[in-house]
Length: 409
Image 1 (cartoon, one colour):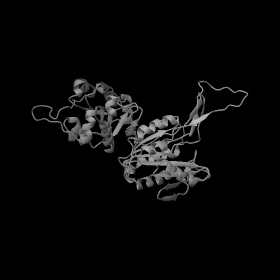
Image 2 (cartoon, helix red, strand yellow):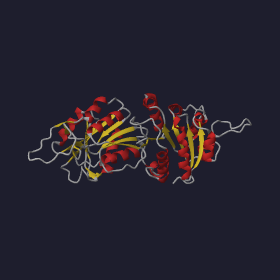
Image 3 (cartoon, one colour):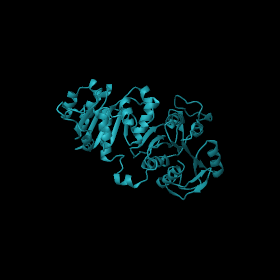
Image 4 (cartoon, helix red, strand yellow):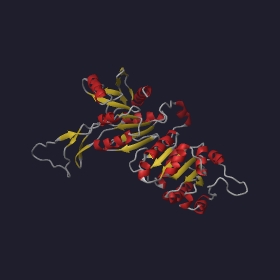
C-alpha cells in the first residue's frame, strides 16, 4: 500500500539515527519514494552518504545546497510529500516543532507540510517524562500529528515504556496501515462529523477485570467491553485523542486516534488510570471493575478436597473515587452504574460520593441490554437532572453520552 507514495523522512540528532537506514529500506521495499531531510546534529550520528546511497537521492540538510544561489525549497517538499515521518525525533526537535522555531531545514519543512506527519520520539525516559516534553507532545497532538511509540501505535501520551524509539518495522507498518485505510477514516466521512472534541484527551476504561484465585481460576464478570469501545470510537470520530484502558476482551479498535492499554486486574487498571488521568481532559469509567479480590492467590492450582473451600476477599481499589479526589477544575469525570435494584437511588449516591460530573445508569432488569449485547438502555443523571433514553445500539448510545459530555465541557 506504499507503492508510489512519497515520504519525507526527517532525521534528528539521536543515537537511534542509525535505525533510519532500516526505515528507508522498509519503505523502499514496499515501493515508496523517500527523501531524507536531516538536522545538522543528525549528521553527527549518521552520514548523508549512507542515506543517499539507500534513497538514491541527495540528502537535504541546509537551506542552500551550493554557494551559487541554489537552494532547497521546504515549500516544494511540503507539497511533494504524501507523508512526513520524523524518526528519530529528539526532545529538542519536539520543542521546536511545537513552538514553530524554524531554525533548520527539517523544521521549516515540517511547518510547510501539507501531508500527515508521523513522529517517533527517541530520548531518555526522564527527558520524555518531563512536563515540558509532555506539554509539547500534547500540543503537537492537538495539531493533528501522529505519534508512533512502543506498545502504543498512534498518539500515545502515557509514560509506560516510552522514550525509546519504536522499531523500524513497526514504524513502517504504521505508515502502511495508514495508507491502506486501516484505522483511517475517509476525508469525506471525517468532514461530515462534528469535531467538538478536537484536541481533547479522553481516557476511557472498558471491559471486566479478572482477579486471580490461583493460576487457572479468577473472579470476574460478564462485561464484553462493547460499550466502552463504542465510546472510544465516538470520541475519536469527534476529534479527541483517546486512551482506552481495556480489561480482558476480544474486541479490536478501529480509529488511529485510540491508544490502547491492555490490563487484567483492578490493580493494573488502577495504576494505568492514575497515570493517564494526569494528562486527560476527560475520564469515562465504563469498565466493570471487580469490587473484591482474593486476599491471597494460590501459587498452584487448588485441588478439589472433601471440605468446602472458603475464599477470603478484600476490597479492590475504588478507581472512580480516587480520580474524583484528583479531579481538577479543567477535567470532567463520567461514571457508570449497573444496578439490579433501587437504580436511581444508588446511582445518585455514587454520583455524589465519587465527585462525578454525570453518571450513566443502566439496569439488568432491562432485558437484552448490558453485558454481552449490542444494545443498551440508559439514563444520564447529573446535578442538573435526569434524562432517559430509549433502547438503542451501543454505537448510538455512545453518541448520546458523548453529546452530553460535550454540553458540559
